[in-house]
Structures are given as C-alpha cells and as structure tokens.
Length: 371
Image (cartoon, rainbow, N blue to C red; front, side):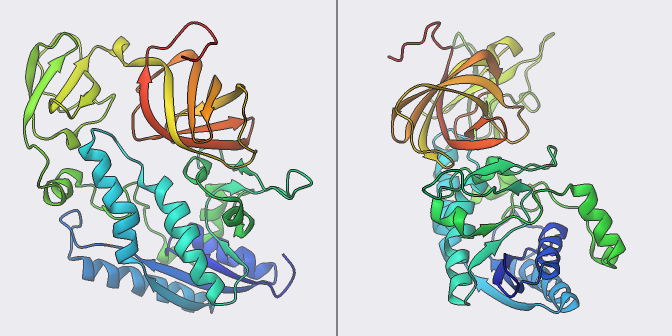
C-alpha cells in the first residue's frame, strides 16, 4: 500500500481489529474505522439488544478515540437478518448445522460493508483475520488466499466464499502475525484496560443460548421427537432437532455401557439418529454452492486437502467437480463427524483453492469413478 492510501477497517472493538488499524497507520495509510451494527433482539442475549449495542459502540468509540481514528457506524441489522440469520434458521429446520460466518463474510462484511467503505473513498477494506493474501498468482491478476502464519488462529476457512473483486479490495494486516504477538502489542501499547476474554460464540448469539433463541425464532419447528438407533429402535426422546449436531455425545440421555453419538438428523421423521463412535466416519461427501477462489473452476479431478470444520486438520482427498458449483470429495481415510451445513474447504499446501457447503456424507466408493 502506498503512503496516504485510504483504507477502511472493519472495527469490531476486539484486539485483532485494533491491531490491524494500528499496523495500517504505521504504514502511512489514512485509516477510517467501520463498525457494523448487527445485533437483533432475541433471548440469545443476556441483556436487551439495545443495551448490548450501546455497550459495543461505547467500547468502539473509546478505542477509535484513543487511536485518533474517524469512526462510521453502519446499521446493517435488517440486511444481516435477511442474509445471515434467516438462512441460519432455515438450515436448522432442514436438519443441518449451518456456519453463519461463511455466509456473513462474502455477503455482509466484504459485501455491504465494503460498499460503505467505497462510499467513504476507501480503496480497500481491512480486517483482523489471520490469513495471507499474496501477490496475484497469474498473469490475469487473479488473487489467492493463504493460511495465516498462526496455524492455531488461521481463519481462512471462513473466507472461501469471497469473490475475486472482494479479495482484490481486501487487506489482512495480521497474516504474518500470531495471536500472542497481537496480545503482547496491546499490552505494550497501553490497551491492557481494553483487553477482554474473546467469546467463541456466534456474534449474534453471544450468550451461547442457542436453544432459547431457536425456540423463539423457529416456532414452526417440532419441539419433541424420537431418538433412534441405526436400526430404527427408539432409544429416547429429544426436545428439538436444532439442539443436536453430528458427533454430539452429551445430552442424549441414553443409558448404555458404551457411549452413543449423533450420527445424523432426520427432519422428515423429526428423529435424532444415534450410533457408536465407529458409525461417525465417512469417506465421501458432496459439497454444493462451491466457490473456486484462488483457481479457475477445474473440469478434471484434482488432489487437495480438505477441512470439514474450522479446527479440523485438512485431510488428503480427491475432488471430483460435477459442475461449476458442486463437488464430490473422496477422502483417502474416512473422516469423523462430517456434518451437513458446515463448510468443506479445499487447500493445496497453504493455498485455499475454494470451498462449499456440505450437502451430504456417504460411506463412499472404492474407485475413482463418480456416479
């Protein structure tokens, strides 16, 4: 970035966005902070949404004032509800476990917020994601995305859905940093009084009370139903499919000498299907709504490593493109708890090739032919 370039920073008020803004200032950029107002009113919050919004924005104003940054608060509550929350709820109704962050990034943060940044005259939108964007990968100027230096904090998984236009206009100042280095900087820079334990919950359900929120927002969802084993034998009852996910062990209420796990959710019969640990493994999945980010859409099978959730170690697999936005993934070794609704993200070494939403998982075939 040349000195004086105007850059907007997606400013949440957390230490990562704070550090990203500081790094850009050190490089001589003109930095403006953009804060998204997105919290809806719901029982998923310990306080009224208005109180939480005020607390967040008071913190953001205090931090941007300390950094002497201009701040713009962008009210995105209505589009966030339409683009992120409603698909999130629809996924649960369909017996899936959706990942809202993979939707929010291309549709809201690098979509609507990037538009606001451009209205303010900023050429780029920067975030505190721990990922790297190298120089264009080919003569056509195609950008790629790589995993961050901090493997434990790498957030590339959540960004597979970006377009080339969005990636070209993005900056990731923390790609070569570690979280430990960011926290150390915050202490040394005098921001210790602003540090807080960061929530691992979804941003619009900060309390983590998923069932309370989903019961209110999904009144049409059946409240109770059977828990059955793979043979159809009733083992117990559940209080709503939305309270369960593939791989779950706790909360089933099944007395047994060996543990049971959720193997799949069946919305057609409103049943939670359980099995033993060995029943969780799948060697094949089908991904839909695939976006090829760092490479042009392939028309031949290719080798890649695939992540099926954020903390999953990418597993070697062979990808079979069915058409532009659908792919069959065949793992070399079966993977545990492949969960419909989560993202399957494809890598070649550190380079993120693309990704899609897991539609279904199967035991798999033993050859290289795609049915």
